Image 1 (cartoon, rainbow, N blue to C red):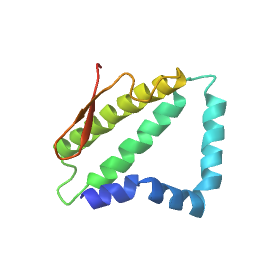
Image 2 (image 1 turned 180 degrees about the horizontal axis):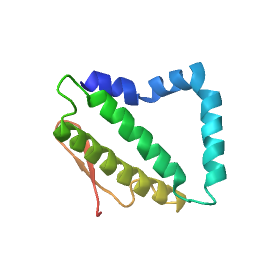
Image 3 (image 1 turned 120 degrees about the horizontal axis):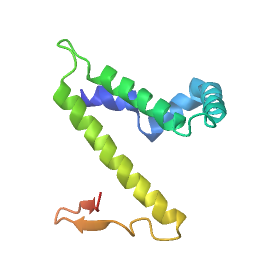
Length: 119
């Protein structure tokens, strides 16, 4: 299931390959449409993006017995948490601060690093 999800959501390499094959004209058309509609709805890009992420996630999770809601909620929660962290990092950089200025980093004995912060 995770391989299927990774394939549909794609990493940087999968995304670059998809864009290089056929996505570029479609991507430009989509970005143009978002820019045109942004005056009416400032959140149109986020709305369209979230709709696409949700659809890809549900497609990836769909199996013989339907969509396991627990897995869908877990994946959406992880994506939401990461999105919050990415936003905090981008705000810090925009203000000229180190990327992790508003996060607390905790290193484990195993060499992993976890980031925490106020919601």
